[in-house]
Length: 345
Image (cartoon, rainbow, N blue to C red):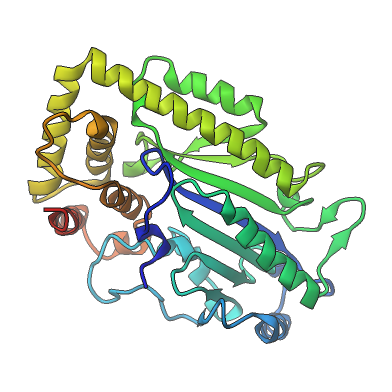
């Protein structure tokens, strides 16, 4: 079965993915940061008895790294979306467990930051992801004694999550907005109007200064999950329209310059023998910006491949950085990119 991030998504020219994260805690246990080994094992056993193995038939626990390609220096490892880009779930791994679907689009992590972390993910813009996560949360709430207060809502160790315990995140690639004069400031103002927030996918290192951003809600108290989703849908549609409008301006007013950068970017991705993350993401941004306006298409690259490459690079697992020099990783990355692009030729 294809993984969720390999599938076609709606509005995938702008929205890389839609993710909903719901956190819940079980009454009678300390929060994970204060749990002892016996409490962890007891909770793990209790959750294991109520998990629907028909939906979440894959299980990970212990120290084994559940990423295909272990043993080779495979830099591009989008499965780390399940375990965290920095693979922090592997810390104290014997106290944790993850249950996930065949396409890794639906999962439950036990004893990470909260007792239960439910994640639903789909490629592109997909509001149905909320119902996937909410349905799974409701099922667990019926089977477990979930910590809940009539006054405060669902109780969490992180006060920012108390209330609904629900966070909706859209990962967007917005090269035209970023490259437009004042475009990013305009977007920030619009996001603030919805009481949401926007931040770079990564704010430091080689992944910083890219055109990939996260849009997520701030409020989890005093607002229902349905209201959070409603605001998010209004906002993401605004962002899609704004990005497409900026792309059209680039394509019509700076066509010669942008078409040249489009071709050079493809050449870098297709033929470079070494490429760092920032170079790759910038090149993918130019490809994304001008793809729909290339009136003499010489480079037949699909949106699915553009999105896969972008997400793969963004979600590279950092465990490899300690095992190989940057130059070696850049060569591995360039080879992986070429291999993926060849599939469109």
